[in-house]
Image 1 (cartoon, one colour):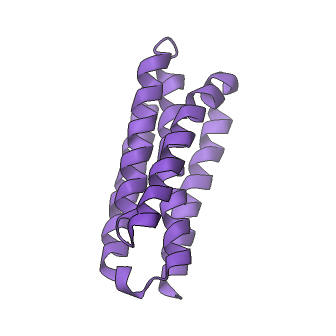
Image 2 (cartoon, one colour):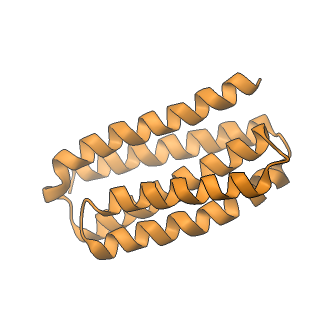
Length: 138
């Protein structure tokens, strides 16, 4: 069971990395409004998924997991926001920070619900897919 949490966590980072490479090549074609949405979805999504998965894997390490989720969200939001401009970078940074603070609380409330984690994974992967598709049409 615990191996699946690690696979899901690594899978999220791989999807984010592939998305970053794709968006890096298209960054000059993407407007600021879409760039803002990209930074918010990636920063918040990575922080949220990281916090929920880690708190379900290590339920007694709340402070460490909160810090890990915050750092993941801030770095992810900053990297994706940095593709566009400084205002977008700041938006991704702050959204990653706030979602990183909230994620372990939501994960603790879900109390090891596999259905919730699968729903969350489908939602996050779907969000990344929508970002990539919408960047194609901008």
